[in-house]
Image (cartoon, rainbow, N blue to C red; front, side, top):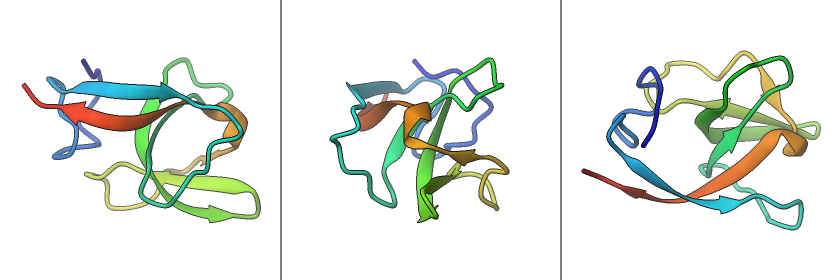
Length: 88
C-alpha cells in the first residue's frame, strides 16, 4: 500500500498497491514514468511522475500537484520504477 499525502491522486491512492521493478542504470526513463525515489537529505521515499529532464537532472511532479517538485532527482536517487497499480 502507499503512504502519503495524496499527491498522486487520482492515479495512486492510499489504498493502492504498487507493482514495482527495481531500478537499474541500464533502464531507460521517459517523461510520464512513475518512479520511487529518495532525494539526499530526505528521510522518506517519494512516488511521483517524471515531468521532464534537464542537464542530467530529472524533474518530478505529483499528479495532484500544480507545479513541479522543488527538488531535482538524479538517477542514483531512484529505487523503483512503478510498472503497475492495483486498485482496491
